[in-house]
Length: 351
Ligand SMILES: [Zn+2]
Image (tube, rainbow, N blue to C red; front, top):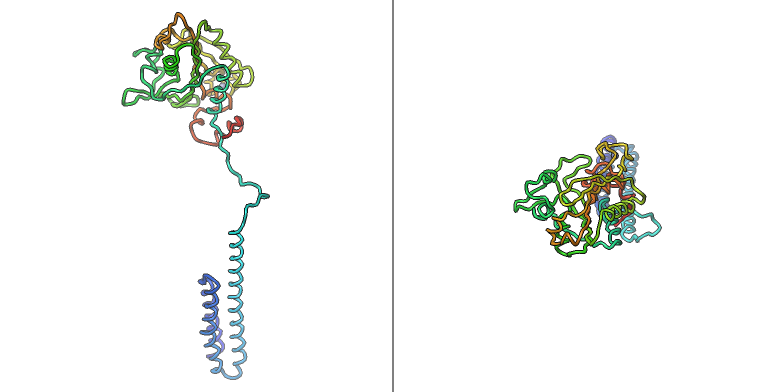
């Protein structure tokens, strides 16, 4: 063996040491790998010194000792790194809650804009002595149309195409079925509101959805007139918007009221200038209303000669859009939280 061969052998031993260090999964494994190297290959090369010519034995011994020191250092460093990691791991395990740290950033849930508006209107009407009632979303033809003075073949049905179920029932097109159900259940005098989900077979655009929310209102008593109706509607809009809202009342045809009105409010998205939400008109239909038709009272087993009343169908979804400045109705059913963020902040209603 000459010095060059010795250098090559030492380089191989060093490479083996490096490989063993990487394989070792703990301090014990490191120790035994180091022992194996020093007692095995390193001891062997040390013995081979005798075979060198006397003048080369010095440099050979120095080279072997240098490698031995490097390997020792290599394993010592690896052991100290492992010990350090153990200490940190132990600290993590025993770490306790630190109240001085800032809290993690979490998203808070909040009420859906429609729910927020619904609760507001419910609060208002409860204060006026109204009961809040519900009704089924699956309705019979009788409650959704027939009892509301919309007999079969009546053209008003065309405007309210809906989803029919195989059992002959349908998904209600408005909350108005709750009127007749309330009359049957309570009898006069009646003051109820009925919020709920409605469905129509609609082409969907910025202001039309197949699923939307209405809030039905019904007041039946003796000597109720249009003046009462208008007073209630104005109060409702003033309370919801926190200020007087520009409205217009125009005649509207709904078979279950007579006379019937369409109450429009000035579009809050464009301030009445005209936009996609208000179909460029500057006005938004928000509140069809009117005096309950005598036929509907009869269906509800109430004598129209003794009692009169008014009814309205507030578009809760539209109201939420106007209140929170949501220009596209599709956002409300989309589940897109970015679209709802605006309303979340304004409603201030958190769960
Ligand atoms: Zn508009």
